[in-house]
Structures are given as structure tokens and as C-alpha cells.
Image 1 (cartoon, rainbow, N blue to C red):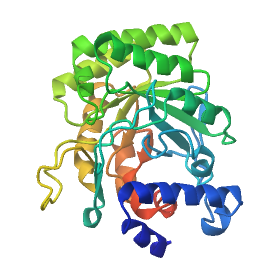
Image 2 (cartoon, rainbow, N blue to C red):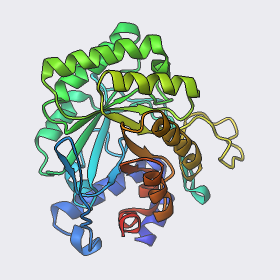
Image 3 (spheres, helix red, strand yellow):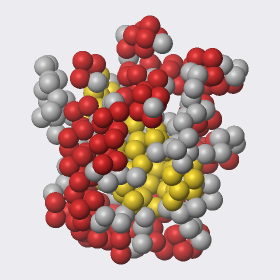
Image 4 (cartoon, rainbow, N blue to C red):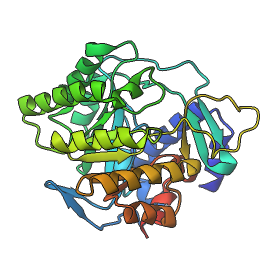
Length: 328
């Protein structure tokens, strides 16, 4: 496994990402997962609103944007899977190169921009899945949508995935779609939340709804959002998305590198957001994500009020072996 990971790091990041996921799918199809990744069932159930999470560790949205790898990822021992972010129309995302590794710091900067094959494609994959664990679907808006059309994008995705999602995440915090983080302002998130609430009633969706937040917002902004989340009877937050703050990243020639930072350097900021949300609304369910790379950082999320934890970058750097390290 170490040799394979070392080889993948020699390749361009997006190519390595695709090879790794398709290799995992190959192992799954030929029932070889158990040979390469034994002892992969970690049962410590957590129940929320009728959903049974096999354990508290999940894979964050962004790794499997289109639902192509639900079954293979679900076979590794995660307690839940989140796919997306998905948008109504397919879109290619931002120009390449758009993923940058900082291997010595176990960090990644990405400016992907919601590249995905569209909500209809994802629904087809979700319908065909064999995985029977908890599946969350992360929804967003197309890059060229603004104003009311941006809200309409969220509602279109919500309506199309609501019959298949165990929970839905409303992503208002990607730094790579122009203007998306403006949805953190009250004049923008209130109409969106109202529209989501209306869609929930119309679709008779009773499963959890989470809002994924940015770690770069001011205390007052987060306080307003969490208050609104509670008032609309949404179920919780995911804290957090990537940060545009590179102060914890040791940079060289990429000093002006744009995009969202994930991995170890995100741990502090994501924990600060988790602390803030928990102090303001302790009864909201929190999913902690950002910087989790070992047992200590995993446990830290739980100690700070998270009921569930997600990983992304550490899975890329360590592969499936990280699951056992975090849950053992």
C-alpha cells in the first residue's frame, strides 16, 4: 500500500485521484477488498432521527462527486458516505491545474469549482447502489446561476435527490464558486433556507438537513446562521469546508495560490468553528470535518461537540488504512 501511495503521489493529483478510486472499484467488483483491507468492519452505532450510523466516521463530500464509487467506498468500514457536491446541470469546473499537494504537511489546496456530471446522473448512480448504509447527498448551485436562479438550483437538486438521500447537505461554503459564500449573509441565507424548508414540506422529506459552513466567517455571521438553522428546524451543521486562509500552510513559490485549503493545517480553524457552533447551539447535531489525520484529532472533534466526523485529505494521503487508525 505504501508503494502504491508513493506512486500515486508522483502523478498529477486529479489523475491519481481517478486511478485510486477506479482501482478500489476493481477490488470491490472482484471481491478482493477483504484481502487488501482486512478487519474493515468497525461497529459502534450512533442513531439520529431513525438513521443508524454503523460508526461515527464518514467520508466527506468531494471525494465521490457523482456517486460512481458508493459501493466500493461503503465496503471499507465507513459509518456513512456523503456524495456530491452536485448541481442541476453538468459542469466542468475551473481550469486545470486546480489541485495542489503539500505532501510534507499532508495538505491540499483545491479550486475545483463543483465539477460534476449533474444531478440526474448522480440520481441514477444512487438508485443503482447496493450499499445499504447511511448516504448523504451534498447539493449546490451551478457557477453561472445568480440571485433567484441560484436558489432555484438548490431546490431542483433537493427535489430530485430527496427520495434517495438519508440526509441532505446544503453547501453554501465552497470558496471556488464565485459569490457562493455570500449565502452566509442574512439577506441571502434566509430566502434560501425558506425555499429549502418549503421544498422539504412539499417533498415530505423527514430526514436530516445539514448546512455546510465556512471556517472563514465572523462570529456574528455564524451566530446568525446557526440561529436560523434552529428556527427552520434544520438538524445541524457540517463544520467545516476548506479555508482560503493559508497562514497555517508553509508556502514557497505558491505564495499567491488561490483555492480552499484542507488537511492538517485546517484543523485549528475547523475546530474553532466547531467550538463556536457548539457554544451557540449545543443541541444542533455537528459533523466535524477538517484536519482529522490521527486518533487524537478524531477524538478532538468529538470532545468539541461533534457527534459524527468526516475525513477527506487524510484518506487521500493514507488510503483506507486511516479508517482503522481512527476507529481502533
